[in-house]
Image (cartoon, rainbow, N blue to C red; front, side):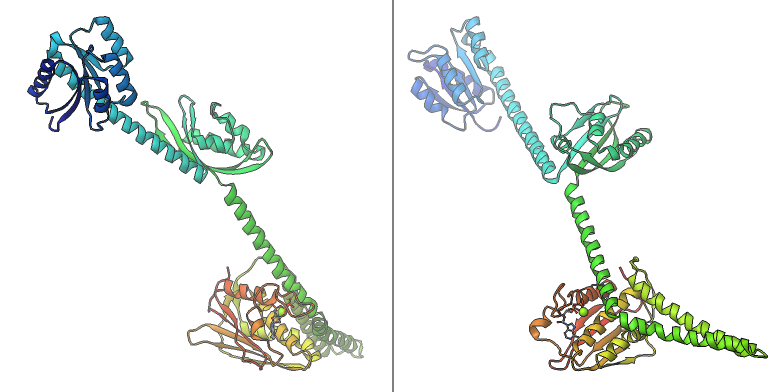
Length: 505
Ligand SMILES: Nc1ncnc2c1ncn2[C@@H]1O[C@H](COP(=O)(O)OP(=O)(O)OP(=O)(O)O)[C@@H](O)[C@H]1O
Ligand SMILES: [Mg+2]
């Protein structure tokens, strides 16, 4: 042993003390010995933190070995304590070891001293290492338990041969069972929401047969009636005993995530509802225009029907003329059906559908729909469309909605004084489609400009304030951008881009 062995030696006899030191040093120990002969000296010696070993005589003039042992056990229970005494009877020795002495060596057989010291030191070292390993293990156990709690993830093991199941603390907590209860499949099934039991049972049955990895999501119905969502994943592995087979897995409490998902879905639905309300509100605005728009071809059809019947009643009848009138009637009615189709698509609550959309055509349609309302507001609608505009992959109804929002806002801004609404389309230099809607109306203050895209911001008595916010969302979902670019005092201009071949999401 290389580093010096620090020994506290309780011994009144100088000769014996020297003998002990010689014995130890003869056997490659380098010793640093602190001698103590009294209680005071012994207590002081115990304070040396670097101490490795205590050797003590049993009988001293002013002190005794057993009291020393007691003091040592109280202060330094980790240190080996060996009695080295001439007068230690067998019974006393056994008693001393029982109390906590490491060993005893009688002076008449001092040859035992070195092996005894060696063994004591080895045992002490091993004990220290074991303690360290245990501490590290306990710490990692504690960290693991804490991590499981934080992540709401428990672990489990399931031995298929014995049917034995292990649950971690967190697994007990998730299932809300007392840690004293023995885990079982039945407990899991009992806790599982009745509607999910068959599903869970089926997955477990299959896992048992196929012995392959499984994932299952199900609900738990807790004792207080609340519902939890859990996801369990497990994979098969060979057990500790040869031929055995276990599933090792984790069970996560995903209730919070589920609730957040539900909340997101609820908001998405709310948004869709608002977008729908926005469309229906606008259509209300346009009811008069619509009536007018439909009335015109219907009137034309009626006139042609009349003409047709007159040609047939003639003597002789004129079938070519009659058939011409009938064809005109069909054309007029087809147009009516067409208009109704287009309009009713705005009332429908379908899922977004992508198709190739000609934006110029959408602009023209909307101009027609708005024409009547525009005329009543002394507004003229002008279009300036790029004939070479490529089609865009988009949701037609949603784009109709955007254009209608922007055009209606424009007409409403000119309601009192009249003016001109210009809708233009062109291709930008980087190949996108650009649509602009400009009016010569009241415009807005810079204060208002900062808020017009906010949901529910409106300056109109009947407005919902959703038009621009919904339009911006729709354009963004198509991969484009919608913004306002007015020059103060000159009405308002709104523009949006759409990528060619954009896909709505
Ligand atoms: N072309 C415009 N000229 C002047 N102000 C406008 C124009 N477009 C929008 N605004 C202003 O922005 C506000 C918000 O417009 P938005 O379309 O979002 O809602 P709204 O028109 O008030 O209500 P709704 O669209 O439900 O009828 C309007 O109230 C108005 O103050
Ligand atoms: Mg509006």
